[in-house]
Image (cartoon, rainbow, N blue to C red; front, side, top):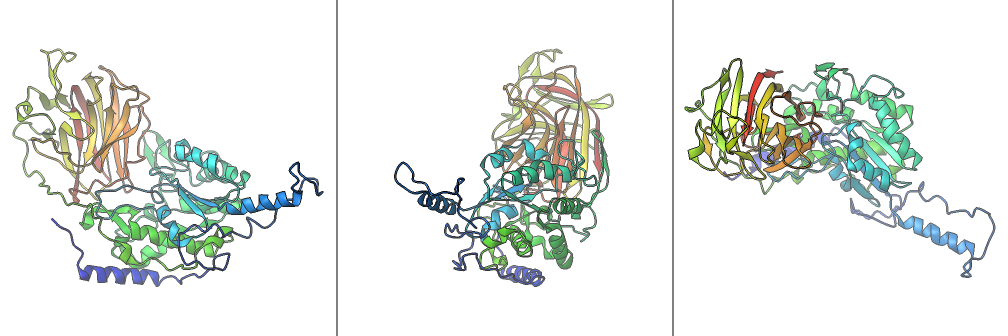
Length: 573
């Protein structure tokens, strides 16, 4: 179906954005050279801040000397100072997905983080966006981008630090405590100081803290998690204390005399005034339907609005970075938002009946679909899906006799472009948060790069259908690439591309039992495979591109896998 934007919709969008812009006065700040190139986002090597180049170098001896080449010291100092002036400072952006770059080729309104739009409001410097989706102040330390920052940042540079969304997550490898002090290990304040503020200041770099933007809330309530004020949460990893993350970040800034740009406060004010409907066109969406709106991540226009807020907050700050603000500080025009030209609506018919081949087990419905080679394999010789005592037995592949260790035929797969799986599933409303969990005992599992088993939540579901098409996106808590030297723990298909969760540190053999879990929040999905660390980085997409009303969660097997699932549970929040 061809998507068009009608004139009436454009007029409505313009009216909404005009209302939001009326909340703020437009700041005017001259560029430091007072020349006013008028080109926002362009690099201007002749522009410099008064603080960066206030004085030339001074000779250590304080005396005039003549070099071997006959050039006097004054000349050398002048050349050195001139060389220093030619280097323009860099603004480094670090943080989570709300600041990061994306490559959403299939989205209706693709995701953009505010770091991608800063160029509109600065001149005379370089901007490097090193934000990584899914990271917290703790987990960002494990990324290559953090190491790059430490290597490449130089005296006189600036770093915009935008975390908070994922520090709230009840996961040992991402969570930071919002209540304990800056001297207490494990607090968000301590992480900000020890690993960001202090090393930057020691290198002569200027850190600037940014509180997290709010999440769009359908009920227009920003006093809870949507406004980054969380309650305590309990998981199998322990109890994670809740609190006010924006307040904690502000306290860290005050304690260490670091500027804080309060995006939580600014976005909360805008979103409260305009309401959820009034700000919906600031947010990404995977399809043209409102049900597919991503309440956490912004689109191009929303990112530009947040970049403008950063510039506006800088004007009021004491940071010398404001000397690099462009002359033209006009807020973004809503007309910059256009439908992704690569977007194609997919035709999808939700199954309206149960399988004639595989009996349902309680609320779980059985199906086999995807790339299983041919319909001749769509039977109980090559797949087994049935109840077993108080569990569910699932097998993909034909085994010799009753010996599950001898594979006669491998059927189904998880490959680079296609999937062929057996699945027991339930539809779940796309706007509901939930936890899907199960224990599984392994009877047989091939060390094969296309074999897998576990939990899966996906955008689409098909009833006993054979096709070699690339189907919808999903996240999975399970193993993959088990025949390689770097097997995967958890994986996803994102925009049709098979994506690794992380390298597995623990694999499991026949006879062993392990726990699996997929937890869905407003920010995306977290997948856990046994004793391996939970995976959420990169799994922050809503799975609503094909079916915007439901996602489909359940248990699955692919290729020579023979397992029994126990304690299969779907808990809606």
